Structures are given as structure tokens and as C-alpha cells.
Amino acid sequence: MCGIVGYVGKRNAQEVIISGLEKLEYRGYDSAGIAVITENGLESAKFKGRLSVLADYLAEHPIKGTTGIGHTRWATHGVPSDENAHPHFNTAKTLAVIHNGIIENYQEIKAMLIEKGYVFRSQTDTECVAHLFDLYYDGDLLKTAFKVNSIIRGTYALLICHRDSPDEFVALRNEAPLVIGYGEGENFVASDIPAVLEYTRQVAFLENGEIAHVTADGVTVYNSKGDTVKKEPFTVEWTLEAATKGGYDHFMLKEIHEQPQGIRDTINTRIDANGYIKLDDIKLTKADIEKFDKIYVVACGTAYHAGCVGKYVIEKLAKIPVMCDIASEYRYSDPFVDDKTLVIVVSQSGETADTLAALRESKRKGARILSITNVVGSSIARESDDVFYTWAGPEVAVASTKAYTTQLVAFYMIALNMALAKGTIDEAGYFELVSQLKNTADLLEEMLKDDSEEKEVASLIKDKSALFYLGRSVDMQTAKEMALKLKEISYIYAESFAGGELKHGPIALIEPGTPVIAVSTQTALVEKMVSNIQEVKRRGAFVIGIGCEGDTLLKGVCDKVIYVPKVDDLLAPLVSVVPGQLIAYHTSLMKGYDVDKPRNLAKSVTVE
Ligand code: AGP
Image (cartoon, rainbow, N blue to C red; front, side):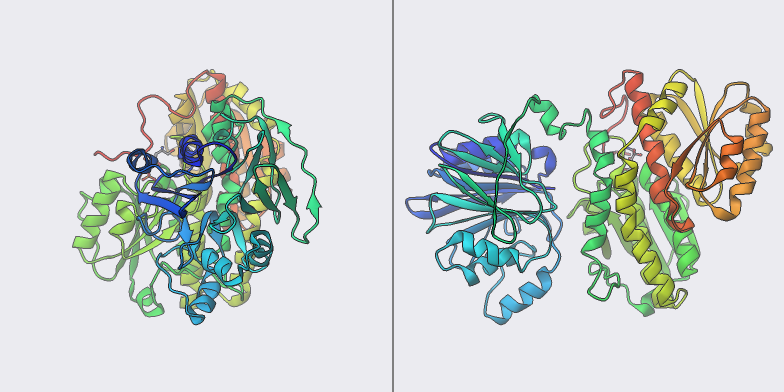
């Protein structure tokens, strides 16, 4: 998710754009840039680093003009660098493009343009839009926008301006948000409301497929067929702070609701025209995969819990033994790692000290390193042999949610391709799981429409001193993640147990009224879980089940059941974790704690 601001009107465009981008920095900040149409043509500046680097430069080297576009980047394609920063330009630097999202068919477009003699300067997908505009531009910016919009595919919010069309710019939207800010003799377009609030509270959103032609006197919106679309601006009542959270009360809730889009973005650009998963950033060959006699997964916290699910998934699909270890333990355990070991390092931030140290220890022992991370160009990404980037966008809340589910998606996609390469899955099974995996985004979207049941559970547990989560097999890994979510933001002691382990000690903890959350999605184990639930019920526990729609057994033994959509057992962790995230969120809220910044914790633990 990047920050985007466009302006045309009577003010100094540079001031409006920089001020707007400052309100969007939470959306991405590894590089920033601006392009302004001036009496000298198109002038620009762009740098790797925080927005302040660009702002400091412009303070010394101001660009004067009243039409311009600006961008803060959260990298997906191409490491953070001056060259990869937006805006991107055509060869003659007469037009500038800024972009939020992913152009899914950029490789075929790039090949066609190179064929026509275009030279690319950056590693980004966005640059192909700049040259595409150049190819078709005949002086009519809007007409060119329609042509380009008919060619590109993917998620995109694009702003384009041209030196020869000095009093206008165009905006194109598909899946990535764009908001129009209506002023008097001036108009704005941005990726989010906070960027325009200083100047106007009259806004309207572009819908998918729409194109806006923006001048100082007005904004005309067209649908993809070229019909004009009447927009009814509404008045924003939010404070700036509320608007930064997209209207949600907290970043954590916003990020829980961003999970469907994060899953789509992480999957959709990695499915080729024939429906196969293509992992371009991973150079593992069939021979490499067959050479591995074991896999280690190493991470911390929530990333470790994703790894525990990943272990189960890779073993189930690719039939390779997998060990999953906590980075701070792994690095001092002298692990059995050599050149026949693949080490998968998982880290949202890509900077966690223990995880980075575990990576380096693994490399020293000769292992191949594959990392799963959410930050392009992070330390862990740079020191890995292969990288799978989750495209969840910046995760601001300390409690990780969308990073977790997109890390799970990464494991499913890696495991499926390993299984196909090894022949441990047939094509029919492969495509069925790929199809179901893609569909989970819609299932989550539907689940997130109503969190009343999770609120009710939160009200029941918020004053408890301890809470237990039960699960078997892959559900136990989900139980671990749910317990961590509750602990870290509501400060209630929570522990997860394997259902079959209760009678070996933990059941001594159960007394009348003890709340137990039982995760039970695995078809073959439901009856076993029912027995475990009966065991704790007999000691007075209050049991909330997390089960699959259609499972009637749980209803008969639990005090309450939250149902999640029925999916392949293997994919259940993607949907079953969401009630646990929401229960933790609402419990913390009801206890009056700082949901986004819980005590004692940092978003990224870059020290040991
Ligand atoms: C998760 O909710 C926690 N904030 C924490 O456990 C986190 O997952 C852990 O510190 C690992 O961070 P990373 O993914 O950035 O390496």
C-alpha cells in the first residue's frame, strides 16, 4: 500500500503534495517522489528513504507549479532505491506515473515494449505504464488513459500527468483505493482521505474500472465503457486521526479487515495463465527440492506460529520432514543443518534480531535460505537465497494479523509447488487446492461482515484471569496463535494445549467457570476433540468451540460455537484464526487497553 497524492489548482502543488503524503506515511515509506508541471516542463525529485529525505531536498530545491503528483512507496516489485522510487517516466521524461498496487500482466507488457525499443530503468512493474502511455499518447491524456486501462490488469491506483497537458492529470482505479477531494478552483486525488482533509471535506471514491479526468475547474469520472459517471460527494466527518485508520477505531481492526485483500494480492500475481503457481522470486529447481532431506522453519512469535502451520502443510503435501523452531532457541542448539537442508525464515518485518541471527547460523552451516517476509529489501530478504514476499501492505499494529494469514498463504503456495515438482500431488488435487486457496479471501470477507459473536465471547472472558485454547494437529497451531493474540493485547494469561495432552497434567488447571476455546476443524479429529471438550466440561469449564459450518457434534457439547466456512482441512487455519483475532481485539478494547500499542511490546524486535 503506497501513499498517492495528485493536485491541480491555484496552490503550490509541491506544498499540497508533501503535506498530503505526510498524512499517508503509515501506508508505506521506503522511498518517495514528486513530479510537477512547471514553466520548464516536467520537474521531479525522488529518493530512497523516508518522506523527510524528499521534503528536505525540496526545501533547498523547490519546484514551482500548480499541477503535480507525489508518492510514498511500500515496495512490492524492486528493492527500495532512488531508481525504483515513484514517479516513473517515459524515456523523454515528458510524462510521470505514480502507482499503488500490482500490475499483474506487467511482464508481458514489458516484453512487448522492449520489443518496440523501449529501455527500462527500474525493476518496477509501474514503469511499464509510463512507457505504455508514451506509446499511445497523441496529445489527449484522457483518451490515452482509456487505451492503457484496457491493456493493464491487476490492482492499481494510477495517477498520470504530462508536460503537454499542464492543467490536468488522470487517475485510474482498479481494486486499490482512490479518493477525489473537491475544492474551489482546485481538485485533489489521493489513495486515502487523510491526504486531502487539510483542504476539503467533500470527497467521493472512484470505483473499480473508473477513470477520473482532473482539472482545477472540475473532475469528470468515466466508467471503462467511456460513459460519464455522476459522483455524489459526501462530507467527511472524521478527525484526521480517525481517517488515518480508514475509519476503523484501531489499526489492528483495519488490518484484520485488510486480510482478504492481502491474500488476493499475495496470490493473484503468482498464478499464471494456466492456473499454475509461479514463484518468480524463488529459484529452487526440481533437483534442488529433491536434494533436500529436511527443512527447518525458523521464526519468532506469530511468524513462528505461521511456521508451525507451514511445517504441517509441507509435510502433508510435499512429504519432506520439517522441523519448526523458535529462532532464539534454534540459533544456540547447533541444529542438524547442512547443504541438504532448506531453511525457511519467516519474518513480517524482516529485521527481527533472533531470526536474522538464525538465518546467518544456517548459512554458515551450508543451508539454502528461503525467507517469507512482508518488507521488500529488508535485512532478512537481502541475506536470503530466495524470497517469498507477502503483499499484506504495512502492518502497523503490534499484534500481527494480516501478516500471519499472508504468511500461511506463502506456505501453501510453496508447499503446493514443491509437491507438484516431487509428484506427491496430482494435477487435479493441485488445482483444487489452488482454487480453494484463492477463494478463502472471499470467505474471510464474508466472515468479517459480522463480529457480534466474537464481541459476545469477549464480554464473557474479559474479567477472567486465565484462558485455555485447545486444538489437535493443525488446530493446535491455530490455538497457539489465538493465545498469543489474547495475551499480548488484553494481558490475560492464555495458554494453548494439544487436546490429547490435557489428561497428562493441564486438566488440573480446569475449575468451574474456566473459559476454554476449542478449535476443531479437522474432520478426522472432531470426535476426539468432542471427548476433550467433555473432559473439561465435566470439571466445570465454559467452552467456546471454533468449528466448521455443518459440524453438529460441537454444538452438542460446547456452551457456544463460532462457525467458520468449511474448507479443505489443510486450509482451515486461514479461516479459523479470524475469530481468535477478533476475540482478542474486542477483549482488549473492553478492558480499555491500547490495542495497537500494547505495553512492553515493540512492532519489530531488532535487539536480542
Ligand atoms: C505478533 O503479534 C507479535 N507482535 C510478535 O510475536 C511478532 O510476531 C514477532 O516479534 C516476530 O516479528 P517478525 O515477524 O517481524 O519477525
